Length: 111
Image (tube, rainbow, N blue to C red):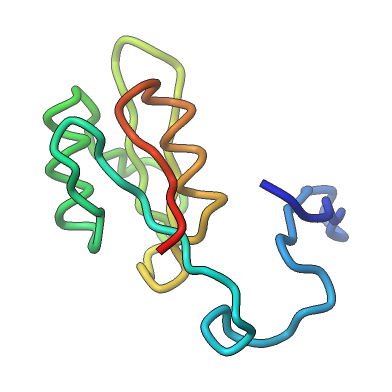
């Protein structure tokens, strides 16, 4: 995961993966990242498929947060997975968050 951490005016940090690049990944020659569920080898291609996998792993939808986010939590931990509502904005930053919170179950790969 390479990039530059940028501080916004509200004090929140954000990782900018390709600073200075203002074009779509496919147009710039970069490889697109995909999230893979290792036990099945399934590439996560929608929130519907991700929802099903996470529910089977004990994650539940969380509705108490930001309405612009798609969130999951586990009763057995303090972890919260927050994803943008628009799957097209589901970038490697969110993918790696899922990988870290579900060790040995997911992997991020270049497509």
